[in-house]
Image (cartoon, rainbow, N blue to C red):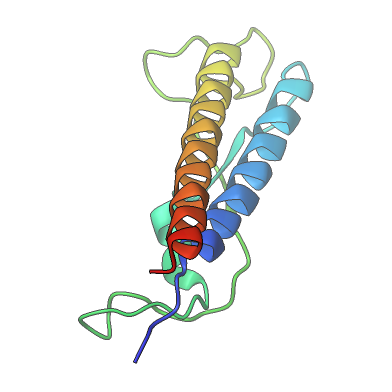
Length: 129
């Protein structure tokens, strides 16, 4: 009996997560000078993945919970060590740029993994394995 290959579904979910995170970061940067604006960020992907309904094999029932696939967004507080603008906003442009760089790095890594997996599947199909 064969099992499905879920890498493409996982990559799709992660791409959606990264899009939401990038949009949230862009909103923070756009509102950096808005008075009383609270910086926002999305939950870590591991927590988002735990809430999705991906049909993945697991060794224990608690590994993946199916609770829908909405990506939750939460407000963050300005962290110590980060410069905050002179306005009453809690947005740190330096921190937002680091987050944007992290999103870009994760996207590039996901793209490389999917391309490699695709090449592997194509090679397996051509060889008849």
